[in-house]
Image 1 (tube, rainbow, N blue to C red):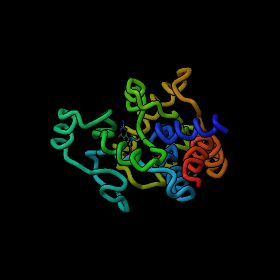
Image 2: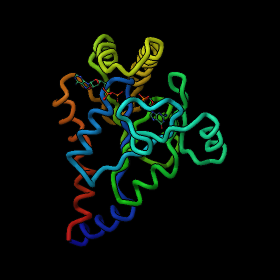
Image 3: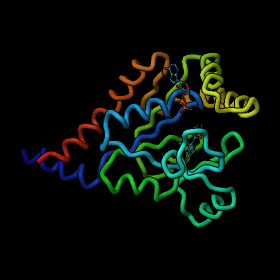
Image 4: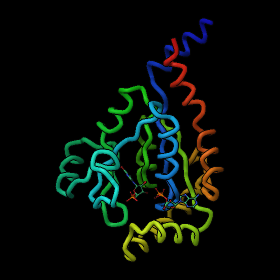
Length: 210
Ligand code: ADP
Ligand code: 5GP
């Protein structure tokens, strides 16, 4: 009884562990994440990154990203406002301290959708997330999904495919990710993702009982 009480007090104090979702562009991170946030409303919170890329149709400023100019982004980085930042496919991306704090202040599981450079940089911080890699079943399936998504120009698509090759190679590094999920069948991948996060989900739900 006392052990459980101490555990609960501790987990409320430190809050749930954040989650890093990484993997090639087009692997299915956003799709899985949206499903997760919908099923577990009030459990997860998305760390809204900054980017210099243009919004895609349907994306909302402040919800999917904070869309900013290179000048604004650089100034923020120089001011020490970012936990990590990276250049990906010709654009800047970064996680601000405020993005993570906003989520953690609400005792939600903070989800970061970041590229491989971001993973490496977060490893140097004390954020202590669970690292999950979402991977496509093959490069040809990835290319098909990216083309079908119809969000990229041919140039951007080729840059993303090249980055994907590098990403998939680096992700083989032992210990880099806690969990690797191959997103072939979406339902199966989703079940695996939920399984990997179950402990943290229970922690949040448990801390709200009474
Ligand atoms: P990411 O966020 O990793 O860039 P998306 O979630 O945008 O990737 O997924 C890329 C495209 O692939 C989207 O059009 C999405 O609907 C589709 N997709 C995602 N997962 C699957 C899957 N398991 N099977 C078929 N299509 C998928
Ligand atoms: P997209 O342009 O498709 O939304 O994202 C391109 C890549 O940038 C994806 O791999 C995504 O995970 C990554 N990304 C998005 N936000 C961030 C961020 O804040 N930091 C880093 N390092 N990568 C990010």
